[in-house]
Length: 278
Image (tube, rainbow, N blue to C red; front, side, top):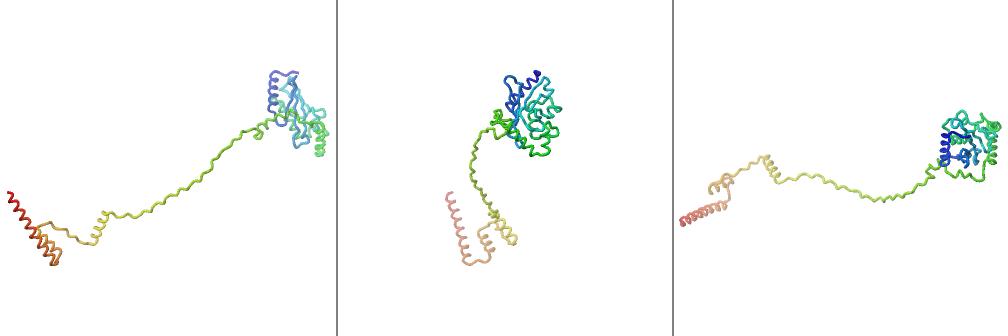
């Protein structure tokens, strides 16, 4: 039975996407003669009695797709409460919870979750459901036995050689070119010692300051300095100096008196020479 053209294009896009970038633990195979002949393969989840097995899920699309879910069944024999001995799968996604946006990948991921969390309350296989509720260890042993006999191949399916989308995006599987960073060796830095700032020394007094300080000291000591009187005649100067200096020794007085006639004779000779020139 054919599907509408829009649904056909949608299925083709999803099939290509699932082959190129499949979810973790889920793969699909198609027939070369009929692209709508789709079979899903689910890898048994680790930590469950189905680990190591590969379970095939058949699909049949009708002209009601995607408004109605496709018909799905478990093609591999399995001991599970929600899978009947005929392979019918009891899951709400394929019944009342179906949405037109769901597709092949959503159905396969839902069935995989059913292998991890079986629901014994809506069991299609009553024996498996009862054993799960009463004795979980016996249920696991029985499910593990059926898995090893019917679902465990000698060789891993070739479809699982294609890495999943999560594995392709993980940093561990991606090849990143390694770059070598060359870090220059740190050169020892010499500590700069600041030259000590010379301590401020007291200002030395300049000659002008010294003169001023001496004058101020003299003024404070109330010493009186007699300014010299205007120059007069030599005799007056000598007499003034002698009087100001007080009594002088006799030798000094005679020397002064000898110098006075010598100065007078020199002046007379100059006048004589001037008269001769006239």
